[in-house]
Image (cartoon, rainbow, N blue to C red):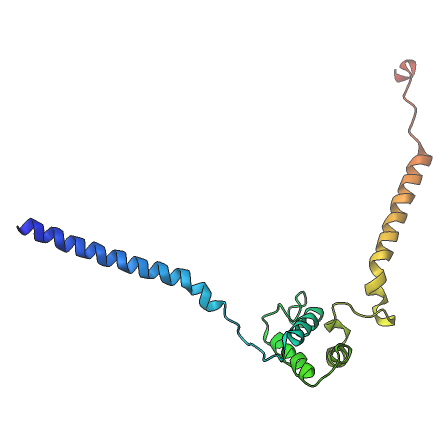
Length: 160
């Protein structure tokens, strides 16, 4: 009889461990769902305004991250800039006016597609200049080798 009681106690401990394991696994599975909630939802009037906001923030650069746009960045400055864009949208400003507002405060660097003007010529045409310089070096090297030619192979008598 005593052996049966020990067996029952062992089964109860195993059942408790199994329940604890299931609760931990369930918590592990549901934990990412909690993180997936929107951090800072903005009250858009309609879907068109939200789409316009997303399009604008995708065209503006995060000044902290520099390789991310405002829509994708998690930096606190990016969040503030998104709120500025949203406030401009609510004020009825056009996309061009909002971009101009951002450029006036943060320079052309805030735009992913800066305008072609005197200050950005090197940015726009620098890669073409580098490509042209590389092509000129290759052409010069090929011409130099073609004119130099290769020395004739020595004759059998000339070797000794």
